[in-house]
Length: 545
Image (cartoon, rainbow, N blue to C red; front, side, top):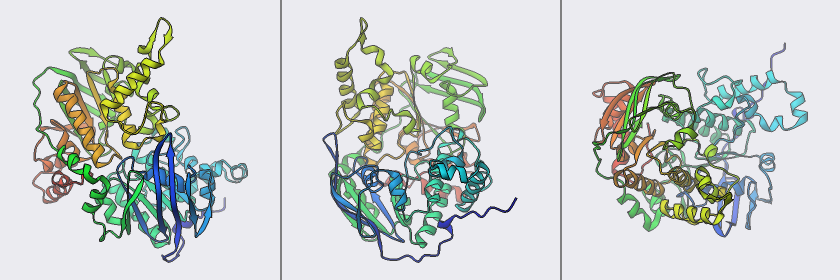
């Protein structure tokens, strides 16, 4: 069989960066169900430049990307590519014009392989499908994955995507975007589920693309990382452009001030609260739990207590939680809920018993085809029926009260859930989990992709639920600063085992050392902990190990 000649153009071009405007928007406005998402926004994205678009959740960042990528048509204004006005009605049209997007929540087909997902656009073309056999797709995918820096440890291109971790799914999404050889690449929170090492790999790819003349547009709440790579910064607030300039003209602190305005002071004021030591009996008690990715896990979560589970991505934290709620098999061990031995067969069974779980995969948890009302009440729909009749009025009153209690703004119960910002969608999931009055709430990466103010509001809500209302809360987070701020007690997981259990306090080095398996006296560990914990005394809450 002759050797395959695989073309991966974005890695082979030698184009020089220039000052050409690859894509721009002029006076763009867009509204959804009466909510103004963008108002008179004008911005230019230049070839060979990384433009960072910053703003709180709901500022209009994702809407701007969707307008530029053909997913939304602007109500007013225009989109120009290389100075020529265009109207796009689909992502396929945008792709043909050289525009690609990496979504915050990977848009993968779970039942397909990595290779099939990377070349999904080609498979949609019947002629392409007939010209490219399965083996050639796999070979091309393998070359592409290696050329973007993924080594042999990354899953094989024939692996089915439903079995991938969140970080692996994100890397496949990035590979798919790059496979189309884009001239303009939008990245919406591409590193929200990536480790620092994976983020460094992503930034290496972006620098290579920048040197080849690609216009890169980066949206991220991890501001410390944004400023490592951005050539220009654009700030949105409430759907309007409120600032633009080079990083030295618009430094981190000024960008945050523009993003949050007068609301910043109240957000920062919520940063820290005293840890509480609960003496109540455990609501959840796990002993000797063993699953496919963890072994011998002991864990207690008490009423009125917030337990933070720290550790590196891949340490087994999510797998422990999924086994407890019955989403994955528990091979050995005992679980007690409020003193009673339980073994859940499914997350729904766990929910009925009073254990609510919010997954790190927001896209698969939200009902995107439904409105806010349905998403807030889907777990308790049966409670709105009486004598065989369903009361939509009772459902609406419940949804409105729940939305008000958890601080969902600028959206009535009839608003499509897809019109809400990522932060408000996360609040909807929180409201839905609380609808059944659980005794234990488990949250996996609860503030991933959430801005500084929304994050502070969620912290305040979780503290109130635990410390004032007595809810037992167990949350998993890759953000060290989040764990140090929010948790009353910290459990550290490494390689599928609990390796430390400590009260919250100024002990970032100990948490990092336990997660890495190194001595706390090691100078490198201490330095890393200092870096990761820097957010404790600043307004940047996004550092993570």
